[in-house]
Image (cartoon, rainbow, N blue to C red; front, side):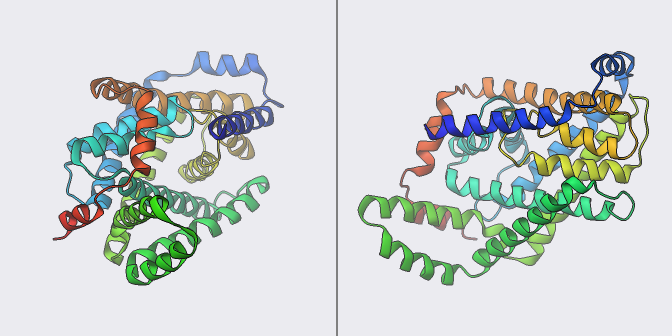
Length: 343
């Protein structure tokens, strides 16, 4: 019932965003913009995006390094499987799937891997907010987004501070956890929770040193700059032009919106903020819609097809999503994993 409720909420959020975009759109003009676009510009955009995907894989290797050094070539198919899962299945199942495959290949606990994924998501959120604030002096943000951006800034900064403190003060966190767990948990539940806690803390190890945090952040900036370059290439396929700074703003707002629950593939939560941002800078709404739909498809299709191939090659099925959830919650031998990760 909880999963059906999550799916229902996601579909409703997507429907609300789509409804928000519909007024002002003239569908025949949208179709005309799509028919007259020069789709050859998608080729360099997809190429740049694949470079960014490889950099994203290297960042994951870096966050996993305190646990185990895994080759980038080994991790790349898992990152693609993660995108495939997020784009096809509900509940953002891709994060679980890539952690599940990583567990099968390297014996890194799923909860440890998920902690590194959370680090990635928080860093991505901070970079998106950085893009937004850097763009503001040159491309003022539509007022409709201002309060949401301020709230997200507070949320992401608070999460960053908390996780960095947890990684740098493991003894204090351990004592606090022990007090709370002793008061409210008993028996097998305490054992499962203890295992999950230790494996999760292991996944936060990459935040224990400032130099590692800086490297992860700079890598994230590079990833999202490369994605903005893709926005720039796809823009040339359509009859409009805005500055790179505006595309940075659009990228930031679009990807902040996709943190909301939505239907698989971020339907609506990607498209509507993109259309509204371009519209605020004088782009015809129908042309903006054609561009945003094409950009969304160019971001969705290549990595989904590639991830689908790796999904098939790993002999995965939808049932593996439930298997991943069960393994993430199951007790494990934490001491052995922790000892293997020590230099």
